Length: 199
Figure (spheres, rainbow, N blue to C red):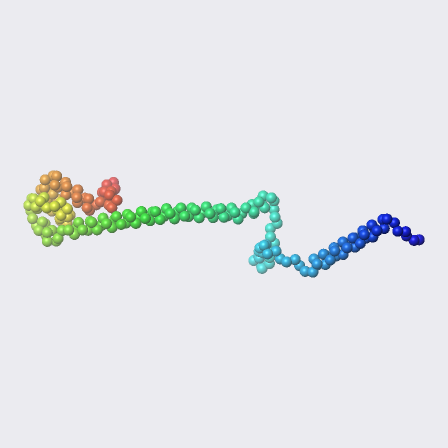
């Protein structure tokens, strides 16, 4: 029996040809895939366990876990930024406190120098002279001397002699000298009285 050509014969021939090409292409692609292992994923991090074997990555979990892992880096960066800002604020506070303490230290040094100058303003010779005088005569002499010098002399005398001399002075002059002695010997650099802070 002989086949007669029909109109559908060319269609069948073209279909057969296309089918043959697609099968050949599929086999070629499969052959290319089987040539070797795929290149390793460079973006993935391999974790090696304590036994030296690779630890498999955790399986992706729920959408919540994927969301959390996706925002982990931005959240960490935000926390770091907040911590850096707090550190800068604290650093500024520490610097301000250091400046304040340096100013107080300088004030204290100045006060100590003034106090030492006050105490050193009286010579030992003058001190010996007033120590050997009678209290009424010393009181009359010290009342005529400038107040800082008189106060410095009284501070260097022993307490019994100084109190006897002050007792012989007029009340306003004795009070003025007493205030000056307290100011020069017990006043803190801040201006607060040391005696008042005790109690």
